[in-house]
Structure formats: structure tokens, C-alpha cells
Length: 80
Length: 306
Image (cartoon, each protein chain N blue to C red):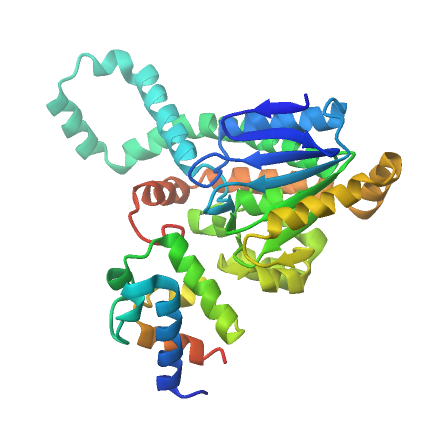
């Protein structure tokens, strides 16, 4: 299992790339949907980006109740 | 017909290829308007009036290729049948009762009233849904068995009926943003446009079951690895790549193309018929109307999730 903090940093970088200024100021514990105001298409886009970046598959339902970068990092970590 | 401009789709012939553009906002949801125009497309393909030797099917909607059936139209259709039936059946009686009396009657009768209403309404809903299903199946079968190669260019959302439409094309070219899913179980339904029998033609039961029974979505890279799409492109490059594939297919002898399609892609007739019956069994459940109501009133960022 990779280092959790390293995963969080990678996901924060990815959010900054995809969501511009709002993504760049995101903190590990922030609610992703509230902080970025993303819609369903952007959520899908983020899922594809995560899968691409880590070369994994994440079933949608595993992200259903996941709202922070820290918790996304835990889901990603279990698939690596 | 070489040129067509519709509400949901338009087409024109360029270099022997019939380029069909899906353009209904927000994401090419398939309702009766799209169905009617797809029927015109299939008729034109089979009677040969377009003169095209291949088809390119793509979407100009940013959200994706197609988000599936128009669930809002389905829900409103069911509501419309219900209101019309109740009005017709109880109209004379209701006009003589006050609102207070009706409210009291509803409260007293409760579940019995709901069950009675369902018994009245459901046969009519099933009849209308079956009519729609048979028409959309004819369209999908018509695309599948068209005497020319149909190339689908896929991006973004390719969900439900959109996935089923994609599976009716012969050659699928997806960009890396495409995602594929059968979310129907979340609505208490099975895919109804021929999707499962057509996916079974491409991949094994493990993949079909994973997608059907979890409702999860699959990214384009994985869909390519599994053989659900034939070609993978960078984001936004799928239409050009699909156009090149269609122009290549258009060079071949038409009779040979038609023979090759019949040989390589036989229609899974019995399974398609089974699917209609399974769908009609599911639609009778009260689960469906409740799930549709949740869907159309949802302001969730992911309304397709339960």
C-alpha cells in the first residue's frame, strides 16, 4: 500500500490541474463537491482522471459517500 | 434522403459516408422525438435512398454520446396515464365530492386506494411501454442489420440506452473521456433497448454481470481492453478517427460488406425477445415509479446513483 500522504498530494495536484484556482487551494479534508462546486459530469471526469493517473479502476459506488481528498486517497490506496 | 435536419439528429452525405449527428440537449436522451427520427434514419439506410456506403454516428453534445432513455418523458408518461385513467374512471363521482371529502377518503383507504389505482393504470402503462420498446428494438435491429458499416464515435457519457445504441454500431471508436454503464437496475429496470444481448455478443458473462448487476461505469481504456470498443483515441479525436474508419469501409464492395456483417454479427434474436419480456415484468413494480420520481426531482451531483 503506498504512502497515504503521497497519494493525497498526487490527488491534490490532479485537482489543481483539472479545476484551476479552486482546485489549487483545496485541502485534504475539504468537501470536494462544496469546495469545487462540481456537477455530475465533472465528478465522472474526475473518476476517469483518477483511474488514468493511477492505472486502476474505481467502481462508482465506492466513491458514492466519499467527499474529501483524504477519503478518495484511501479508496485509491486499496486499489493499488 | 441525402440530407435531414431534425430536432434530435441530422445527417448529410460526405464522400459516400452518411454523417449522422446527435444534437438533442442535454445529452441526447432517447424519447419519442429521437425514436421517430432514428426510425427515419433506419428506413433511409435500408431503402438505400441516401446513397451512402457507410455511416458515421456521433454526438455534438459536450456531455457525451448519449445518456440513455429520456427518463423524464417516461415518468411524465406514466403520470399522464395515471391521471387520465383516474379522471376517466372516477370523474363523474369526483365532481360531486368536495376536496375535504376526497382527502378523508384517501386517508381512510390508504394502501387499498393505491393498489386499486395501480391495478387500473398498470395495464395501460405496460401497453404503452411495450409499444415504445418494440419500436426502439426495431430501430436498434435496423442499425445492426443495415447493409452498410455503421461506425459509432463515442465520448463522455455512454450510459443506458446510449450504451445500447453504441452496441448496435458495427465499429466503435471511443475517446479517452468515454464511460459506459448500465444504470437501469438503480431504477428497478433492466436495459430495454437490446443492450445485454448485444454486449453478450462482444464479451463474456463476467463483464456483462459486473456492469449489469453493480451498475458501475467503465472507462474507455478498459472498454477497449475488453473488446467493447475497437479503437481508442485521445480526447476529442474520436470523430475524425471514426470518419476515417467509415471512409475506409465505404471503399469495399457493398454486397461483400453486407455479407460480412451478416456473418460476423448475427442478431441475437431470441435473447432480444427475452429482454422485452423481462423489461415488461420489471416495469410493473412500484419500485420503478418511485425510483423515476427520485431521479427527476433529484438535485444530487450524481442523480444516476441510488
